[in-house]
Image 1 (tube, one colour):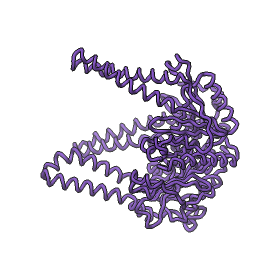
Image 2 (cartoon, rainbow over the protein chains, first blue to last red; image 1 turned 45 degrees about the vertical axis):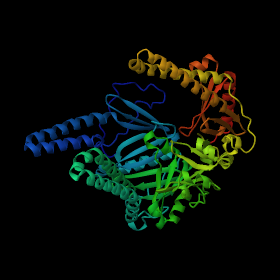
Image 3 (cartoon, rainbow over the protein chains, first blue to last red; image 1 turned 120 degrees about the vertical axis):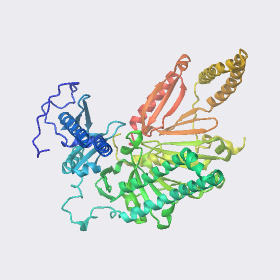
Image 4 (cartoon, each protein chain N blue to C red; image 1 turned 90 degrees about the vertical axis):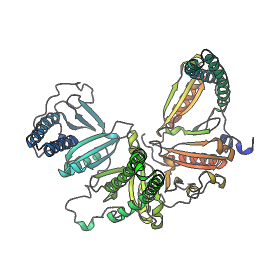
Length: 472
Length: 168
């Protein structure tokens, strides 16, 4: 923010005075966000205004009115953004980051950098057009503590990220592998595995989606054919189609869009390791940089969609406490490798959790549990390995979940009514974070299940005792 | 009862000293279930009265007696399955009549310990201890303890949690 002369910042005239002793002194110079910020944030509004103007001009040939709309939008937007900019900004004060915002409702968020989890650099496509970037800052400790700094110039954002990480005591990322001077030859230098090629990623996404797509098309097609031959195709086209097929088709379309989105998000995937962090860069249209602190990894999952098996490809996802602690919508895990060969998978797994193997021998549940999951039984299992509790399940997407013993929070054994008659029980090892982020060994022999739970507890204590003491 | 149908917690390798809940707990839970069924009966009585006239009230009452009896019987049996044991490094809680549940919470992972008591529980002088870890949705409850026992348990847990602090 040094290159452009900043207009003087307004004194805070309204709203609560920051009397709290943690507030930085009034005189401290706030750093401002990029002037284009409000414009980008009201991107949807502007698009709507442009669309309205266009439609107006197209339908009624009333070009003057279209110009009025555009002018009004520009003036209102411009004034609003000028005002809004005065109140937005941030200050790094000691070991705290203070973020100010809001015109009518003033907000002031304090981010304790001691508890910084990660700083992610995200570049949505509309920001990329102007060379801007946004920082997502995550802090340990529950919901609503993550903060967002949008938008900053891309290089300024990188600097700030390094600065924040340095203050937080995490060794700052080696000044970005993405240096613009870097010749394209050693693109893969410093990466754990070579960048995932677009071709392989596209093929992998396609193969993963294929069973679902084929099933959906088959089901829809047969339904259409059968009902059509019974009731006559014209009736189907009108009533049934609107009532039943359209929603199903919508769901199908949505899943297709999700597949394409995931492909776009994981394009040009690069993962590197820097000290105690995994650095992930990805995205074809919206690029994002993510930092995964290795000592926060609570689990690693290896997915193997059914069509990938012949190629021995697998996907690696990493669960972290930081990611799981976001709001309920974000109990997602971070993809550490969208698709990879066995040796690549092994490298990434070992980088995420030291000494974690990537191939596991799991033991199946007893045969008397087979009728409960006739197809998936062969692909279900659990194992207590040296470092981690490993479970395996899933038919279409076969998943191995490995939770290191030191990350197991609590252990549960449940035994349903029918399970009791059969002498079976389910073991659950819970890791920190959201629901669904736990390793579940289904339908073990009851005696074995209880012994497994006891063993898990012992190993968890032993593993935790080996670690250096950590806060929270 | 076939040998396979033994509750899952009886298969634990090694000995566990199960602590029982307060004997009052059964009374409290039976009362609570009776109240819940009563609410249902009152809700059902309105349409029954419209449909059958004043006979509907009798039907509702009869239904209430049957349902409440069954429910009270089930609840009374469920209460007996509750138990907790303090081991060297963790707290073990068992419960459940149809679905048997066994939760093991290491002291080192405990984040929060709550004491709570509802109105009926308070009338009988009972307290519930709730233990939370960093895993969402893993609240472990130890219901129906006498207040001195509950606060003693909480203090022991808190001391042990501070001693063996383990991370996420």
